[in-house]
Image 1 (cartoon, one colour):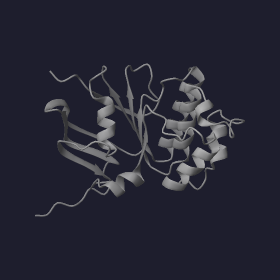
Image 2 (cartoon, rainbow, N blue to C red):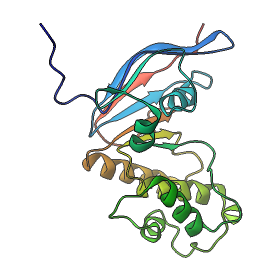
Image 3 (cartoon, rainbow, N blue to C red):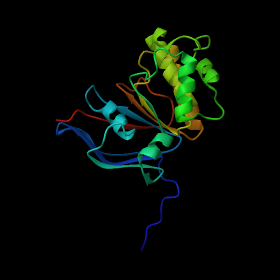
Image 4 (cartoon, one colour):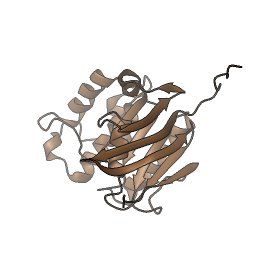
Length: 214
């Protein structure tokens, strides 16, 4: 008897995912799933492996075991590039390009949602009037908002958000929540790392708690 494929597999599924550094376990084995229209909130203390987990999912670090699936299929590099948008701790912009030039460059490399222009994305995140400001001239909070503008233009259905509330004021935190809500309403999903549940988007959420390896 052959099994029939799930007609509605999770957008992302992890099966027995493990990672070690210098033969010391960092996390795993982890089993979790994220469906379209929901967020997975990843909590844990510093050193518990939250950032490492997102980097493994994004393909920036190799897993030591386990399996990552996207839409029910093994996640290869090309599939991850299309399906995932990663917001890390570092902004990843060219310092001597303007905010708008950086967005245009990244959209040219990675694509963008047809309904979103870089100019509109800058306005949404509160950077209207900063289109010509060089990235190196922006404050830490403005650089985070520029990263959010890139996220907003991305066509990727799965957002990997590593401490997205860092360097943001209350208005910025609310901006992140609105963006995640809108993304999930459009059928996307998000993984959000945070130190505490006080900083979490008000959406349908699963919880994954990472603990430091003994």
